Image (cartoon, rainbow, N blue to C red):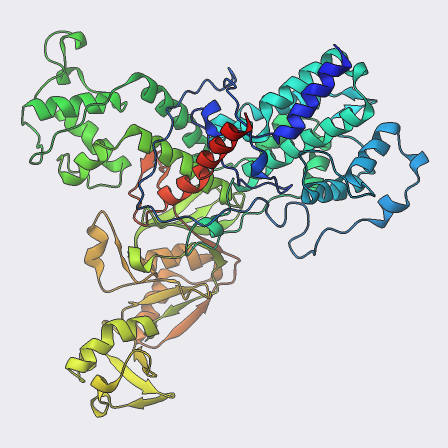
Length: 640
């Protein structure tokens, strides 16, 4: 293998910037502004028609253009601030050790790596930004510029492992060409055949390119490809990503790229299930033209007709097993039945359960809409929720509370085990429940309710203008500057929202909007869990009715499971409730609470669950992941 061939291959990899659009890998997500520990520059993206690795034989249709009415997503940033440094650290500084280190203490390759990342004249290798080289310089200085992927100028097996793992990216819904896998594989193949022909500069350059790909992919497995707080409103989730130095150190300890990446990816049952379901949906997409159930009245058990046949065909295509009675004739090949049999009813109930619908076996408007959902949309739902799950911190070992806002469910967890679950009511779309994490501090029995200013001005002020005594029936008092006043003495028609300087407070009792108890994790969003006197809302399939706080269906059972380790039992809470006085019960344990939003996940029975995207976040995330493809293609066309 000639030196000219090696040089040309390495130069191509360096100039290409190690990335390309999604078209190379069907189901993968590509984005020019993916999270990159080295602040990767999307302007160097190139196209590639690399085939997917046989290890992940996935083929997906290209995602269609998104509707123009989708809200413009804020631009993404490349690198998490803490990937290469501690969260409270300042800008990376040049270490004195690396500056003072004598050149005689370094091998020739180590010295070449040092010179490349610490160029005194300000020059840098093609394809690397100044920020990338500063980050690499910091990480390599901490290891005395010792290479990771080479030893005595010979390529280590770790490099081949990295290429193999990068090719598995489609299993996570990610695009391997974002990490330049095709170009890296070409360079590695050339060097394995004849690394003796490569110069020290070429070897050092490949060393840094491999580390860059390793860092970006590892960061995305550990913390997602995009920053949630940059993509969505009312989302305050900040994924933690290990520093590059920590990643390289742990890799050397493990001596296995495979095992290290496996440690980085989420360990939740939902993530594992979604990876499997992604493969299944890819296969169905490639082999099936699904039948749509025509519009019409609800389909009920015992009815017959063409729409029942459409229902049977759709259920079968979705993977639901039908009984022999659901086919007419002696064999399955003779065709599906046109009568809505008991076997089909059970399949529909199972479908309804998997989509959060009432399990009545009646194919009404909501059930038909869920059945007619595009499989490509469902596949995209899986991709988006794989990304959401990469935003989460590792599954904690102790007890914690997890709220799935999209599902409208609250669960008390210990590891991956569900200790208790209950239905909840969450914020309306215009009052969306924010997503964040905190920890419980106390519960309050017989709480009073300080009416938020937004509710006071938008809902109660119009009522006061019509009837100044309207609040008396609901137990709400009016205060001004901390003193209670008579609302009938105020000319409410002269009060505007801007001039509204009153406080409304509802006393504890049966009519109190917070019910018998509230569970507090004080936060800037003024969000908490609480009881409610409006119990009927829990019977609905969709329960987005609040102003943002989370209502719990059975607060005393929830409280007993949550607070028992702190010495507070259900009988104790019920006695305190009966006394009518406001009492605080402190939480002695450290119990985190995580407010999240999953529209595809594993149910408690291990089956795939889908939920309606009530806040329309899925499209926003998908758009963020795909946003740069058109720009990339334009750049490619102009660069040819």
